Structures are given as C-alpha cells and as structure tokens.
Length: 263
Image (cartoon, rainbow, N blue to C red; front, top):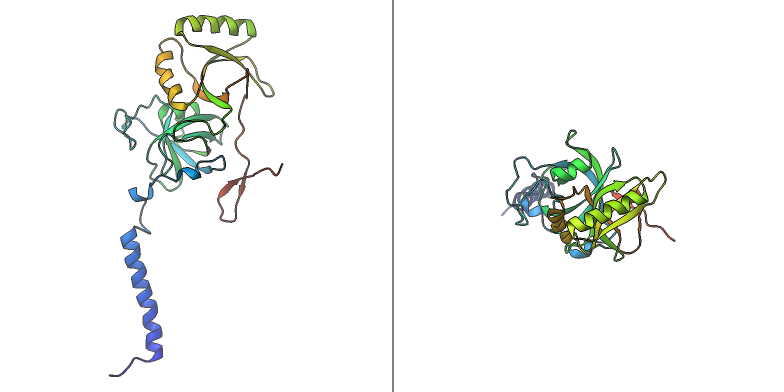
C-alpha cells in the first residue's frame, strides 16, 4: 500500500484538528449564546470581600411579577432583589450606579441577565433607588457584602431598614418614639458621617441577616415607608453617610480588580 507523502500528512492534520474543534464546540455549547449550563453557582470560597464586578445593570418586573424565580421564590418587583448569572442564591451585593453614585443592597434570587454585557437584572424597587428606571441600563460596580445565608461578611455590621431622616436631634427622637409605639420595634437614630451630611437617619434594626430585614419590611410598611435596606455598624450610633465603592484597577486580563492596601 502506498503511504501518503509528508506534505499530504501535514495538510491533513490541520483539517482534523479543525473538525475536532467544531465537534467539541458543538458538544459543549462553546461559541454559541449563553446557556443555562453557564449559570452554575460559584463556589462559596469565591464569596469574599475581593469579589467585585463591573458591567451594566438592567431591571425587570413588569412581565415577571408573581412568577417563580430560579431560586423558587416568587418574584415581587417591590422587593430588593436581583438576578445574577452565577452567584449563589441569598448572596447580598451592593450595587453602585456609576452615573449618579447612588447605591442599593439587593439579594440574589434569580438567574440572568442573558446579555453578555450585563451583570445584573434588578427589581423595579432597586432600580428606582438607583434612579435608573428611565434609562433602563446603567454601568455599575457590584460587590458582595453578605454570604448566601445573608450574613454580613463584616462581622461587626448588621442590616437596617432606613425609614426617613429628621432635620435635628429633637425631631429625630420625637419621631423615633412615635414610630416605636406604632411599630413595636426598636428605632435607632443614626448620625451620618461624611462631609455635608445633614439630618439624622431613622432606622429599624440592626438585623443579623438580610432575610430578617426583608421580612421586617412587610411589617413596617403599613406604618412607615422603607426607603431602603442598608448595612451599618451593629453597635454605636454612627452611620457612614456613603460607603465608597471599592478602588478599582484593571488587571492583566483586562478585568477590574480591587486595589488591596498594603497597610
């Protein structure tokens, strides 16, 4: 039998490699649009203070209202929730709107969004807090602040329901006493830190995990509107006026990375 020449073999090998690559891509879904298989939860070890992500956030809820989410929880657009491709359900993230510097805390209850350039689909209520309902899509930085059990990564912190602010100490304590009687819950008056901070925050809490705070929203809202759920020190009366977004740098792979202080 006549053997093929070296030149012929050299020409056949690239064809075989290309064919094998196509077969592998077809079997794994590589090169196609995002699939459900790509939305596997990240390992719990990944949930630390170094997890940050940059991308675009959108919001949903008009057609999803009342339907089950991927976590099994019924979607309610008036909750502080979001969909993420891979973070474990129950994980709490802080989302910063890079356009107007507004921020909101949400818990992951669903899978999505299914567009490559987006990292989050927010509930309508969370989107309103970021003032993005009109624009629809905004650039954001998000970072994990609590594990899948909803417990803060910073063990010194807890979660609060922020109700309203008062212009002075006397009014703040008068309003807190009134709300305490009506709600039968502890109301804390927290003083915001930061330049130009005005007034006093009226807050319910602290709660040890985010789900406790979420449940309390339903109890509180017939009597007082909850502006948002915030993270703050479990002890003391000082509340950061604004927790700054993590300092970011672009790594060798082109992705944003938190700048870790050497101090």
